[in-house]
Length: 246
Image 1 (cartoon, rainbow, N blue to C red):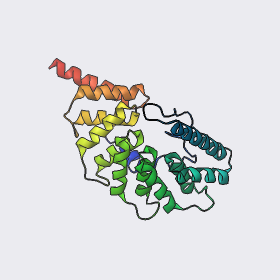
Image 2: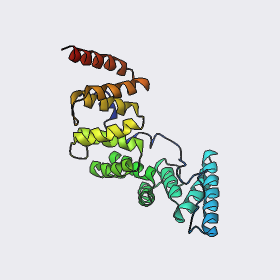
Image 3: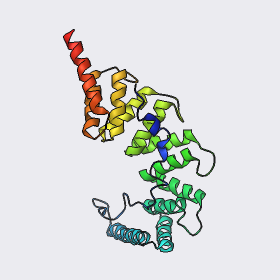
Image 4: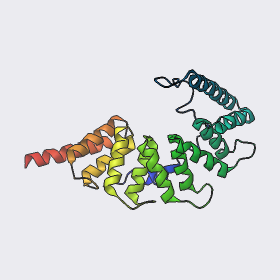
């Protein structure tokens, strides 16, 4: 298998967390629909709408640079058990935006949010443990959180998990699992994953060799702008033609 693109992704579990520089609105953020259906009380709807207003106010304060106000508002949401409030307050700690940044508190907030199924928190924990933000790096623990986030549909986690399995980094090397997660990420539209799963099909790494599937994924990567993929499509076409002419 070609390893083009793999080295650049080795250890790339951190992409986007510390460099983002922004609190994220996700899941329960503005625009989420109120709860509905049997068993939903008017009080539950009112609570949801009130929390949404609080989230909007906290995000607006952060966007305007009123960090103390944002911290207070996200803190209030976190104390109410709001997963988004916990995540955003944790991110403010990580980014040094709170009055007294506390990375241990950030981890506790993220773990509480992750236990509520908040996928961004799961992925953030994977990144924190991979980096060793609060101590020595803990790659096996990072992979555990990557797996949870990947299973819950986080595209960056799927790609990072595939690379962890491919390299045996933080877990035993498992090429079939690497291929599985590269394929899932590729189906989600990640161009790097499309190229990498194509390479695995071409070489028969972790999957049965299949030049037609390799061509399919190289072509997908080419359509999405990968510079090397068009050459690989032509190369596979030549190999398929040669095999047909034999």
